[in-house]
Image (cartoon, rainbow, N blue to C red):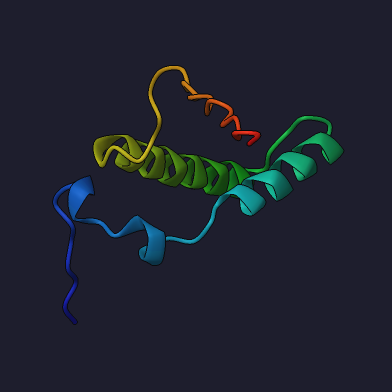
Length: 85
């Protein structure tokens, strides 16, 4: 059995190799509310794993400059006036 480990986050191909964790996190948070704000040991481990995956994915977006930093500056187009001849 061969296992390959990725050495850095930049080598990972997040858009295709990871599953969207947000729906899973949302489900776990809903269960947490239903269980009087308490996770079972298994749920806590799953939540921690999903949060770590999410943090790595966001970090990867920042490393590859796929996140807008700073305010958005929109440029307004000047109105073109037509000649009335």
